[in-house]
Image (cartoon, rainbow, N blue to C red; front, side):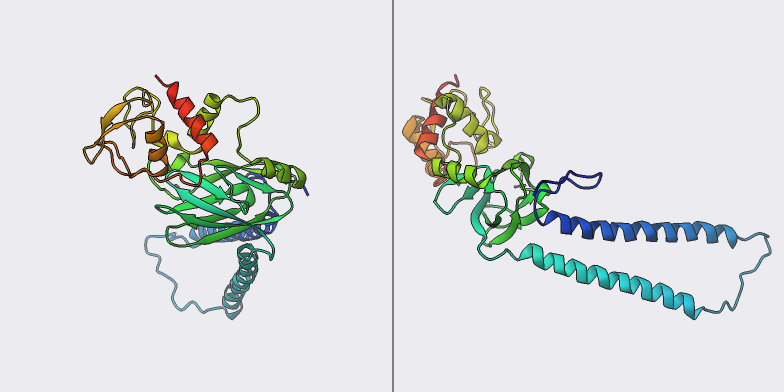
Length: 316
Ligand code: CUA
């Protein structure tokens, strides 16, 4: 199956669930148009027709009711609401019940990145899924409330600390789609956009085998490190400009820098220190900064760490 192009109202339909949701949306919307026209039209028409024409005109008393009209405007909207409810509830159940045998991917949200964890243990910062197969995401947050949103899949759910939530979808065709965080979660909330890569079944298997986010061929460690710097969201809190303070200190001139930790100990920012600060950020917080960084343990592997450090070394 292919993706269907978007419309004035809606983004492209890129999952099997999108069409049924859009039909329901269109139905509710069309009813809104009709009732808007009737109510607004009658308001204008009756205001003109029954306006006060003379200064001494009195209000008409004893207007009798019409059983036919009252019955009609009670029964018809009632039936429409029942249809909306039944239809909506069916779609809701379908969208919230992952098919048996769906492929599970675990999602961890944190300020301000996503980590996608697969059944073979690897973790990625973008999401990789095969086309034509149901995928279930089981999601949790490390810190505050985030919300996982892929408009093209019509999939959206809050991601909370201390609680699992889940969504499922089946992507129609290979392609790329945007992931957004759609719950304000702090300064770099808007920076939490990533990509879903939908791959054909064969390409998916091949890439998974190699590691989805292993070092791209032909890229040197410094250039890869630079990519990882944005991929893991380091850029949200660490500037590359000299002396610029964001949530954390700048990476400019970091390697080899000497300083004092919040606990008053001296440190030198060598490979060991950088590795520790990424894996266990609370171990040596730089004095004057809040202990706000999440751990990247299990997300950044040794090759990636080396690439990041190689990149940092060029910043001087
Ligand atoms: Cu995470 Cu907004």
